Image (cartoon, rainbow, N blue to C red; front, side, top):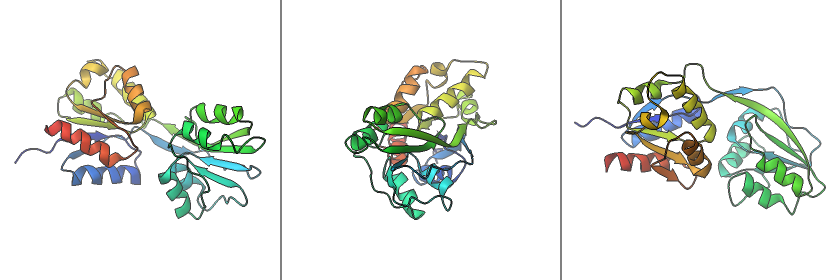
Length: 242
C-alpha cells in the first residue's frame, strides 16, 4: 500500500484546524498539523455608537458572541463564512460584498458611508485598505482590535519535516501564516526557504497569500481562486499525485 502524501496545515489550534485535518484525511492525505497562528482576545468590544460595524473574520464572531448586540447598527461581513458565523450567534448581517476582501467591502460601502461613523472590528494585523478606503468615501472610521494574532512558541513541525524530506505539500491560507512559517524557517540552521520547499508542493489561497510566498522566495505551485480550503487541498494533492 502506498504511503499517504504528507501535507502541512497551519491553521489555529481550534475547530479550524480540526476541520482542515478532517478534509485532508478524507482526501487520503496525512495531515501534518503545525499551527502558525494563535488567537489572543484583547477583551475589547466594538463601540456601540457606530452607524456601521464591519467584521472581517469568523474569529471576531466567536469573540463577541453573547457580549455584543448590533441594535440599529448596520452589520457588514467580509464574506459568507463570516456572515454565517455572526448569524449563528444571532447577529443579523446586512451587507456582504461581491468580492470577499477589504477592497470588495470598500467598493460595496463607498456609496453608503459618507458622513457615517464606521467601526472596523478585527485583528491587529488588518490591512490599511479598509480604513483608508472608507475614509476616502467620507466615513468617520474607528478601529477596535478584538484580538491579536501571534506565532505559537512551538511552531515548526512542518519545517523539520521539510528539512528531512518527509513532507509532500504545504497549504497556506493567509499572508500572516506565510510570514510566521518563514520566521520559523529562518530560525533553523540549514537551507534557505526556497531550497527548503523545492520538493513539497506549495498551495496558497488567493493572491495576497501567493504574494507573501513570493516575497519570501517561494513560488506557489497552486493558487486557489476562492477561499475554500478543500478546493486548495485537493488541488495540491492532485499535483502531488500527478
